Image 1 (cartoon, rainbow, N blue to C red):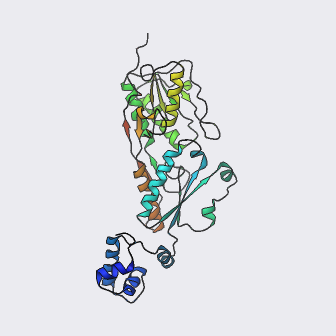
Image 2: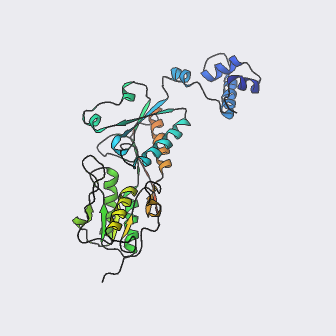
Image 3: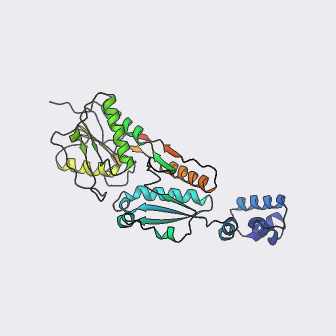
Length: 321
C-alpha cells in the first residue's frame, strides 16, 4: 500500500489513531500487547516511521555518512565505488537510516579538514569507502571489510601458469592501496609456489603520486601474460598492446580484477575476478550497526571471497620460437 498512514493501521486493527500514535512513538497509554500488534501491522503495510520522533526518543539522527576520496572518482573507476555506495545506502534503508555522501579531495586530507557532514554533527556513524570498505590498516583499531585479494590474485596467477605462462608481469602501483598490495602478494605467492623466477622489471607502475593512471612503461622483454590490479587498467593495457601490434590473447594474455564489464568499451571480454560488492556492503553495514548498538568492544576485520570469471582475454601461452 502506498503512503500508508496511521489511520490505515488504526482501521485495520479497529483501534484509534491516538493509540496507534502512542504505540509507534513509544509513549505510555497502550498495553505492550497492543504496541506489538501495531508495530507488526505497520511493518506488514510498509508504514514509514517518523524518524525524527524516533531519533529524538532514542538520541539518534538516523543518518550515516559515506566518505569517498575524490581520486577514486576522478576517472571511470568511480563506477565501482558508486555501485558500492548504492548497495550501502540500500542496506541502511532497511534499518531506517538515511545515507549522506561526501567526496574528500587531497587538500582536505593533507590539511586534516573534516568533511562538512562530519562537522554538522548530524551523523550516527561514518563509513570511509576505500579506507573502510575495500581497505584495511593493520596499525588502526577500526572495523573493516575487504575483498580476499591475496587468495583471488593467487588463483588468477595460478590459472595463467596452468595455461603454460611463465613470463607473467604484474600491473599496479603496490604502495597506492592495500588492495593493490595484497593482489600483488597473491601474484608473488603463486610465482613462488610454482618456482617461477620473479623479475623486478615485471612490476609495472600504473599510478602517479596523485593516484591517477599514468602511461604504462612496458618491459623490453615482453611477458606472455599480465596480471592487472583492476579491470580498467587491464582494458587500457589491452588497447596499448593492440596499438603495438600484439594480439590478445593469441600473443599475450591479460587479466583484470573487479568484474565491471561496462567500465570500458573492451571490458566485456576480460578475464577477471568477480567482487561481491553487495556482500561487502552488507557486511560493512552490519559491523557499523553492531558498533552503534554497543554489541561489542573488539574491532573486526571481515573478508569477502571472490571467484575467477574466465573470458576471451586469456589463452594458452604462445610457443616460443
